Image: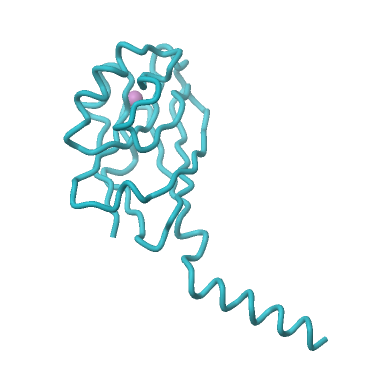
Length: 149
Ligand code: CO
């Protein structure tokens, strides 16, 4: 009985000193009208890692109206898009081993969802970070800002 109580105390202490796991779970939708459900992704500084879930709530196949979510410095966005376009759908419109890309999901068709886990250390700078869909032609509308604070 005493052992159990001590165990509970230790677990509680751990949770209160680190970020609560749920705080580092982020969900965003890609909607049928070719938009993200939010223009901003807020990541707490206490999150060393983030679980990011993208859901495509549309109903079109991915070759016609697929969506992904890519994070890079805003300054790198156009170059990442150009190289992603050249890489094609089979590579999820992201150049292989692109150092400028901090995280990305696969291109999803309607009704599909994907969760990726990524480290936030690269967000720890004064740069402005963006998220966008790299499906050709989408990023002009499908983009937003990643905030880390
Ligand atoms: Co898209």
